[in-house]
Image (cartoon, rainbow, N blue to C red; front, side, top):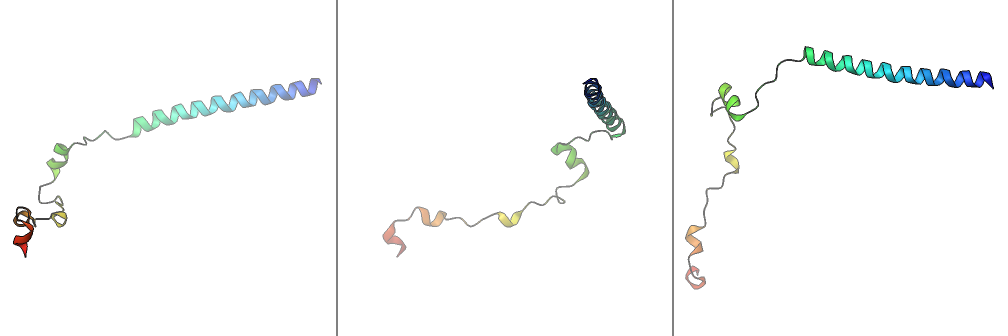
Length: 81
């Protein structure tokens, strides 16, 4: 009975030790990552256009449709034939 109590106390102490060690490692990992990380870059359209020209950007003109149906919309049905 006394041996089982000591074993239980040892397991609980080991469990708490692992939990504390995990949190300490997490804390030092976060601090280390914050210290070694480079400075943030500005992510706005204006800052992007400082390094590029409008000719460098893809305007996707292949998706544009310049064909209009303006000639057909105002006509009557019998006038088409």
